[in-house]
Each structure stands twice: as structure tokens, then as C-alpha cells.
Image 1 (cartoon, rainbow, N blue to C red):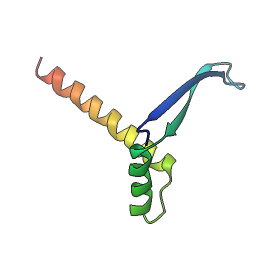
Image 2: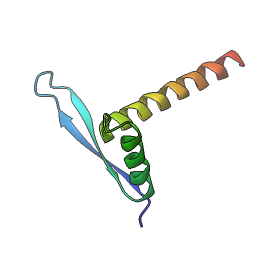
Image 3: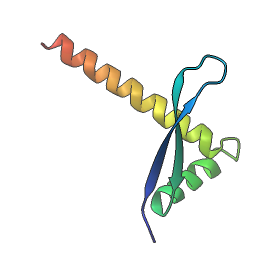
Image 4: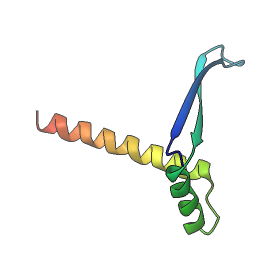
Length: 75
């Protein structure tokens, strides 16, 4: 069983603003997919892979922001 999470990055142009934006495609395989499957199941099916990924991303970003704030306090 593969234990992979692959992320593909593509560049797009926003047709409204003309701004270049990055699009990401996430592919889950193996144990990480099993973890996502369990999280979907534990939510009673109310959460999707997208919901779980969004929560994990926001949580991770918040954690990194807090870490930087703590480091700046100690500097």
C-alpha cells in the first residue's frame, strides 16, 4: 500500500482580475487516505475530504503563526 499525499500545483489567471493564482490538487493514497476516511466516518458523514483538509490547513497555519509570535516574544 502506498502512503502518499501528492500535491500538484498549477498556475492560472483570474479572468476577472487578470491576477495570476496558484491552484492545488491534492491526491491521497494509502494510510493518509485511511485517516481521512476515519475522520469522515467519525463526523457522521457530515464532513467531506475537503472540509477535513480545510480544517487541517487552517489549524496548521494558526499553529505556525502562534509559533512565530512565541519566538518573537522570546527574542
